[in-house]
Length: 174
Length: 262
Image (cartoon, rainbow over all chains, first blue to last red; front, side):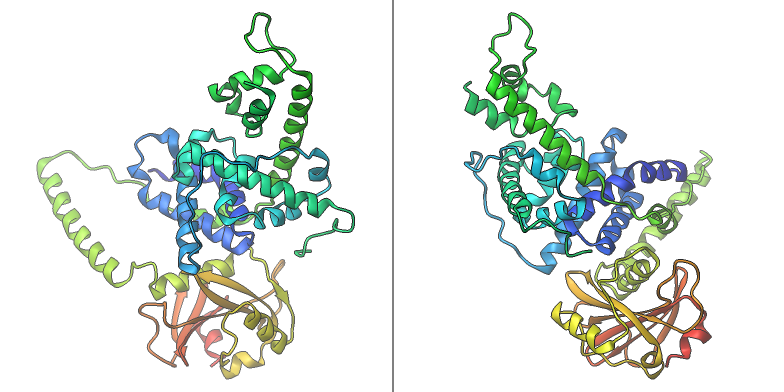
């Protein structure tokens, strides 16, 4: 790959990748490192990519894979099988979201079950189709939807708690 | 399809995305949208329509929060500086040249395999040191700002990061600025930031970084106490092993500057 096109790929995707990384790690240093590591892998392995149009999915998949590798070394969290049907379907709460800032939103995401966080982040951050999200997370589309239903349901409960009187305030980062 | 089934499906619908043309949403959308074309099979339901409008509004609201995550302004330059690949050479298509190129390629692959075995592993010390230098050079969040070393140690211990370290004499005289806990290969790394006493450049908050990690997960670490001095990227580093821990001290100066701390 030529240097110019590498720069173009960086220019186009470093922001979205960083935001995805930050949603997963919620630490600036770790998110920067994860993003850099992803582009490092891209620089060394992107020649294996046959379809240039899949660059975005490839980058997000790589970032998620690197994140999972680091998490697995850190702690082995149970990877429970998920049913395709689920009873915890989200409903809407338009008011509560508007009261929170992005840090509080990510704090809420951090309290969602780890298995669902990446799917929820991609649901909100990226304009990926469900097929693309499935590729990034390396799981079937049905499992993506199942995780999303559960994850969004949990997020909704957390947001309601956060927005409850007496709970609205700045996150601990500030 | 009844209203409940339509809600179940539409709860995962994202306005303004490819979901608009996703066939799995088509029928549910027709039930919820007031402007269903005449002759459509599904009959729009006002209650479902209201719910759907709220859902779309909620989605866009939450999405706007996620999109506000600030990206460090220096990140792009950092990526380009770290991972800049040379342009591919143009190879003349003459048989002898190709043959020579193939021989060189085989040789390079052999060397690369050897290098990978000795240095290229993810858990190799060189990778650890590079990662730490990258962290020091890029924008990072100092988790605790404090000039008090006992407070810093208590914070690190609370985060299960190395806190029972031994500072070289010179470093112990530098003024602590704060600390953060990093992760490398799943292991906590203590990063303690100091001020050397020299004037800061614009935007700087620290100019001396000490990284400490347990020795066990790091391959090919420094043998012992005499510091191993090496320039990594734009920083000068000194690395040593002491008491089962690996230390990397990084500074934006030359070797002479760094040796003052030992």
